[in-house]
Length: 175
Ligand SMILES: [Zn+2]
Image 1 (cartoon, protein in one colour):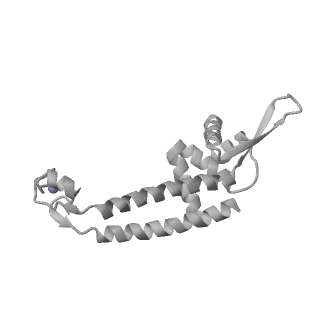
Image 2 (cartoon, rainbow, N blue to C red):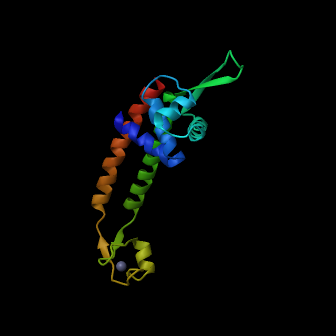
């Protein structure tokens, strides 16, 4: 769970910044609801930045709010909370995407043979090497055949463990 949480938080940080990450982290620790001012004072962050982060997170569907009318002045009060179910779905989508990329990568490794520059490590497919007369495009050294068996092995291990995760999570989310 904590690995999964870290994955998610770094994804969010990449997507909408550090304040989003902090806000989400705080909301996810508990099932309580918070006012934007409460989040701001807890995190020591400007309330406008917190609001912006909350709206970004809401756009992504990972936080929601419940609103109530203030009896005194008739204004709406917003209570924010993490939308955990949607979070899990979002993570699962992302894992599927990574899985697809790894599978494409494996296909590329399986369908090609590779050549490598002994000087700087640049790697080319057979076709690319042929185009360059088997010389490195950077430094002109003669390319050497590159055995990519270990790359394929590594990719296969990654793919099978990720595929297992995806299958398991699909079960828990849909049940
Ligand atoms: Zn080179």
